[in-house]
Image: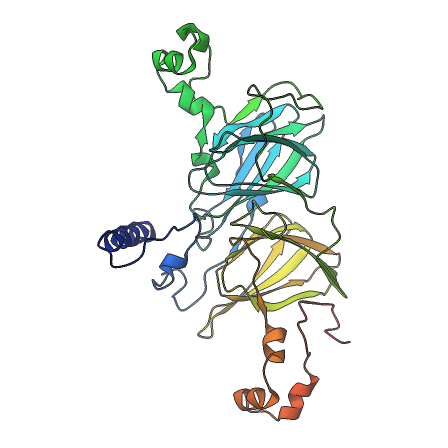
Length: 392
């Protein structure tokens, strides 16, 4: 049975059971694989671990004018069932047209240039925001939005979606919808003559191209009707969440950015030779995009299965939920890693913390070594260590 068919089968049987009163009905968010946890993934249950790396920026893009979009989904990186990503660049005057995603929420990090977005929610609230490098946005699943380049320089941003089966190229665009709807129906819908729609696009535009937008955003047709929670967060203008000898971590989840209920974001800066220590995430998959530098990423999959991949600038890495991993800067310059987790509240267990959380006699018995040996181990969570190691 294919993975897609198995998902459909499980969803169907779960629905029948709920209807029969055998189990309580639950809501499964897009990208949430928890309902599949008892079903072995053929890709991860083999003798060897599959690749978890994809050279995103070297892949073939969708190009319109000088605007580009590249994506990493299960189609390009089969292991990435829980999270998908897109690298998008817009030229001045270009817009990723009005659209929505039916199967995923969207989280974005602005890498270069300036971006303006509009978004509308099911209650009719709308918000227009301008973004600088280091800012992020979050649009809940199904909320209509657009993205446009501000100013006379191009922009670049990374989009993260909480569903690996999502495709940016299979999304719902306004020109595609209006272009395939009969004019009499459109006229009735909007209360305007049919000829109003003469000359409208008859197929999806995807990247619309026009004049550079005004520096000050105009008021929406309906007037100002702001949502209770903003979609914008100034991420890297903050001080780092934590600073270590060897690196820095910025982190934002729903405890600080309330609307971002299904995605947590991190940025790791690692000095040459520094290590984000061995750890795992009990409740989330991890998607990595290398903004700068060169890193070695390890993946531990139980049963003696272990794999190492080297990521360079523009590459993507993916860690399945619960799998052990680490990130080490193996270049001669500082590196920066953008990380997305498909969970609203950050959770991780670091190997140093796990060791420190156990008595000496337990460690001695487990490893068959003298208890005194473990007195030399860290007494607290390391998280990031420099090239010399913790305490050195």
